[in-house]
Image 1 (tube, rainbow, N blue to C red):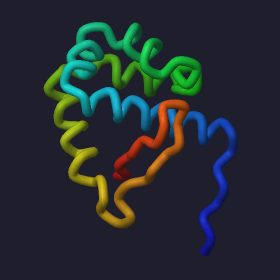
Image 2 (image 1 turned 45 degrees about the vertical axis):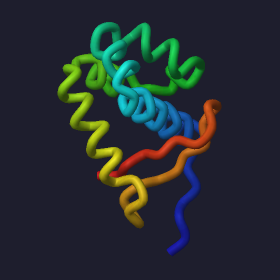
Image 3 (image 1 turned 135 degrees about the horizontal axis):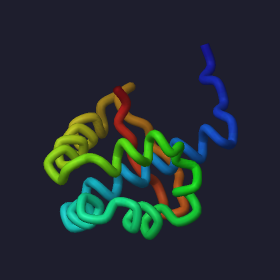
Image 4 (image 1 turned 60 degrees about the vertical axis):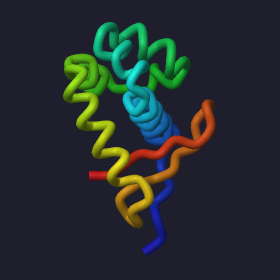
Length: 100
């Protein structure tokens, strides 16, 4: 069955979450995110931050550094495993998003 094409809004949300995944994969950016998530989201995602649903933004914003580190580890584990990750084109280049 061919993959269903995502709507513009769904693509924007996917890009935004993929950019968060990139941010938390970098220890320094992850620390900044844990200390001030809203400022980091706005700075790192730019206009893509608008695509994050408030509930998703709140979820990520409430995670501790260690919880973010575990998510980054999961991302790294999924990367390169067929069917478990997706490459997403963002304004910052390609980002990898692990799937659960």
